[in-house]
Length: 250
Ligand SMILES: [Zn+2]
Image (cartoon, rainbow, N blue to C red; front, side, top):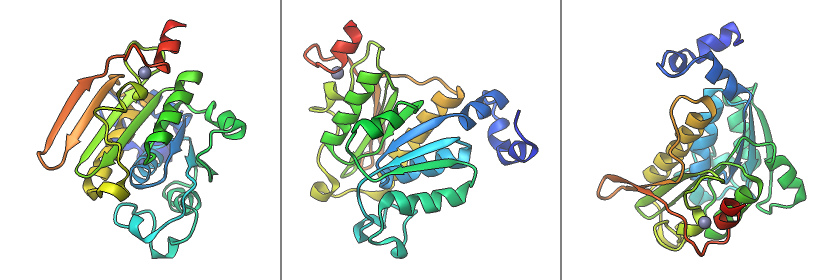
């Protein structure tokens, strides 16, 4: 049962037609692993913690740099030079003391990190490079963990929820075509689309963890900030992909 203060705190969500105490309690008991504490990760972390998440793992090996500040508002000028995971933890923890936050200053999925990742109900990928996204996608397929991945570059962002075992394609199937691949250092990045994509990821995670709305696994959403269009595609499996093929056939 929720405590009296929790009823009050989450009252606006609990008033929603498809949200109930059971969904709120499920979120309180849930664990999310968040890869990347940059522009996307700020949105995801802050929204999930504020909404009542039980446990969050922050994974990132970067330090805070001046060029991060326009998009990464959990950091301020006093955060420069600090590890992103520690600076973010400090701010996120102040949003809700009760949430348990673990930090990992690495991107390497070694046996230690892997052990922790396996306790996650879902992984949210907010990394900013293709190799990292492919490695996380592969881990999720190897261990049957749902994944919400996103990328943003220039004026475009893409978001896709992926569930191993489902018949849709995986991130590796489409990484060569529709998803932005260039790093923001190469092509620049428009700050508002990062916030939008991060909130989209947070929404999909909340939908999954609370059951408030269905998640259409395998659908890729592409937002274009210049045309102001949001398009959705069903991602089919690439028969040549050896990441989702193995899982699907097993
Ligand atoms: Zn695939």
